[in-house]
Structures are given as C-alpha cells and as structure tokens.
Image (cartoon, one colour):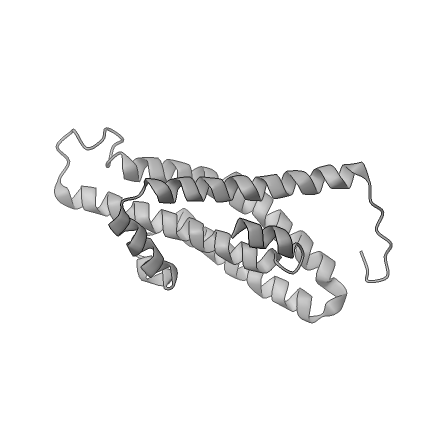
Length: 173
C-alpha cells in the first residue's frame, strides 16, 4: 500500500474492521470487569503502578515481561513508520497484527489464567489449604502486576492506534 494507492471499500473489509473493533471493545470490557472486581485499595494501587509499571517488575511473570518488550518494539517500529510518511499504512498493519495476535489471542488468554491463580490463592483453592501468608501475598502482588500490565498495554495500544481510528479509541478509553 502506497500513499497514492486507491482503497476500495468492500463488505469484506468492513467485516474485518468491525471484527477488529469488536475485539478491542471486548478486551476493554474484560479489563473493566477485572477492575470492578478489585477492592478499592487495590484499584488505587493499580493506578499508582500504572504510571510506573517497571516498579512491579519483580512481581511480573515472564509473559508480562515479554508482552511489554514486544509492545516497546512495536512503539519504536510504529514511530519510525509514522515519521517516514510513506509507511503509515504499514504502521497501522503492524499495530493491528500485534493487537490481534500477540495481545488478544496470546496475552489476554494468559492473563486470564494468571488472574484466576492470583484471585484463588496459590493453588486455585481459594486459600483454604493453609498456604503460608508470604505465598498468598506474593500471589496477590502477581495478580496486581498482571492487571497493571494488561491495562498498561491496552492504554498504550489505544494511543498507538488513535491516529488510525480516533473516534473509536476515544470511546474505548
């Protein structure tokens, strides 16, 4: 796709874009659902960490670190593509591929398992097995770290894709 390319509107493209926006909407609803289930003090803690996600690095899982690494690589690539005006469409494609493949299909699914483990104690039994307090506290911190990572990546992706679909990203945020 070049700057002088003619774009043809077809039902096929409409369906693809609608599905993509629906995917973004559903991820936002999932994040909102998790946030509303947190206690008020945990919600405040999440917002404090959101401005400095690296302070949670000792509690983040390998998948949390990996998605943040991939996100930062995407930011660098997209910024480069947008600065070189000829590859603006390529930047949008890279963002959409990342959202669909890495974030929605991979990390969001892993986060569901991590958040379930964090909410249900260390072994998924609601903490009724007499697990020690340290392990329970670690599980709670990992739960917060996963949520903050999820929110941080989603917020950054909305900022990245905003030039391509501004009205939708404003509604989602």
